[in-house]
Each structure stands twice: as C-alpha cells, then as structure tokens.
Image 1 (cartoon, rainbow, N blue to C red):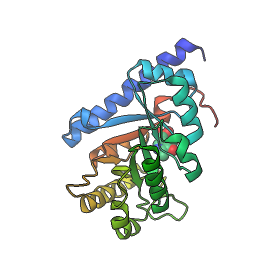
Image 2: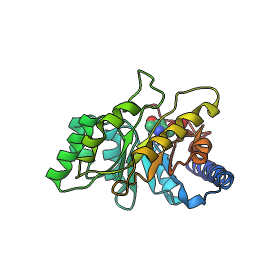
Image 3: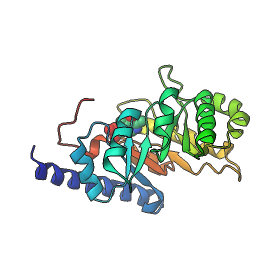
Image 4: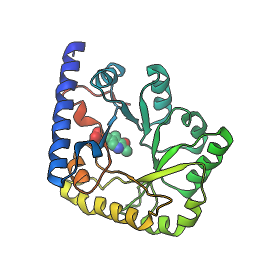
Length: 236
Ligand SMILES: *Cc1c(COP(=O)(O)O)cnc(C)c1O
C-alpha cells in the first residue's frame, strides 16, 4: 500500500477512534479530555507512527523495551512514550531516561528495582501497577490480594511516582465481560488511594473494549489495531 494511501487510512481510523471515544464519554457523562489515547504502535511501521504524530497523537505505546528505546531515539523529543509490555529488570536502566509512563509494573520486586534505579539515576519515573484482576494463571501482574498485602512496601518506594493502576481483561468474545474486570480495578484503586497517593490514572481498554473502559472510569486507553485497520501489520 502506498504512502499516501496508508496516511489517509490512518487519518480515517483515527477519526473513527476519536468519535468512539467521544460517544463513550458522552454516555458516561465525562468530558472527552478526561481520557487520554495512547496509540500502541508495536506492529506499526515507522512511517505510520509518523502519520499519527502528524495528526497530533503524541502519546505512543510500545510493548517491547528495545523497540521503545530505538523509536524514542529515532523520533526525537516532543513525544511521550508509554511502555505497556513486560519489563525485565536488566532493561530498566536503558528505558528509564526515555519513557514517560510504564503501565506494566507487575511485581513488588520490579517496583523496588525501579525505585532503587530511580534514586541512583536521579529520576522520578512515573509508573502504573498492573493488576491481574481475573486471576488467570498465565497472566502478568499483582493479584488484587497480593497488591493489598504489599501496599505498605509499595508505599515505601519513594523515588518512583505511582500514578495508578492498569489491567488487561481476559480475551473473550463478549466485550461486556471486561466490564466487571474494569470495575473491580477502579474499586481496588478507590480502596488503596489516599491523599498522599491519589492513584489518578486507570489504564484500561484496548481496541475492542475501550468504550467499556471509559464507561468504567479509564483515564488512559491503549489502542493499537483499530488505528491501523486495513493496513498490513508488521509481524514483530
Ligand atoms: C498490543 C497491546 C495493546 C493494544 O491492543 P489492540 O487490541 O491492538 O488495540 C494494549 N495494551 C497492551 C498491553 C498491548 O500489548
């Protein structure tokens, strides 16, 4: 597919996604600017990412630290890079200077490593704690009861800035099945938050279920495939 054609496709997809966000916000009685779109570009060609940036999308998400580092360096300043996939502790040092928000801190051990590195590097990285609400065994993240039990240790991490929580619902046919998962994440946030740690951000919702996420209080949605619909995704 030629360059112009791909750009036109992406512009059209972006308009559609924005209209869906606006409609979900209207249903939920929320203002559209209370939800931030993170464009997940893990399967997108670099020129498609440029096309999104040209449309005004400055929040970009990658699932692999290596690709985030490469793209953040190549594309230069003015963009906010979000890491949405797992982070191995030995990759953290390279990612921290480039990342705006890490959505996927799924263990106390990783959080404490980041906290030590942050102190050593004189940085205050912003992170979300990933929670495995549905309790699927293959899934990454804190179990809700684990997070509750670890909360005093979490609070002792003072160099990282814990902005909120993230979850991924089980993959099912029916997007409504994501609703109780998102709702439980919000309720967990409400229980854990206090004036010192307001946990403002809730990262919940992907292409198929972000409307449900918005209705349940998402402040960040992570949308990939629907922005690139009709294009041949790169297999990475
Ligand atoms: C790939 C990915 C997304 C985007 O998913 P789509 O279904 O393509 O919108 C969101 N969050 C995470 C953690 C991902 O890995």
